[in-house]
Image (cartoon, rainbow, N blue to C red; front, side, top):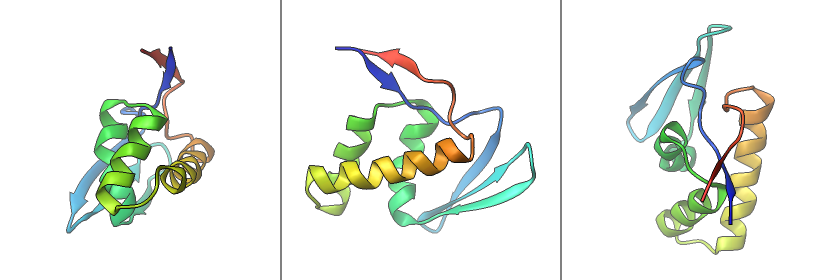
Length: 94
């Protein structure tokens, strides 16, 4: 089954992990973004490219929550990234 690959736009962001959180700068608008500890768990995977399901599994494992709850939180996070135009155009992964 082919699943969409989610990846942060490398051309739009510079980021660094700092004390368990992520601080990012949207280079297009010079806007600073702060990602909390929960978001910081999945941010590196988004930087290298991953699937929604893999992100949810990572979050569920790290936070000891149910997969359904993790999927809901991932969907909200992805929706925010889409709204900010910080994800690359979707591609397919197997």
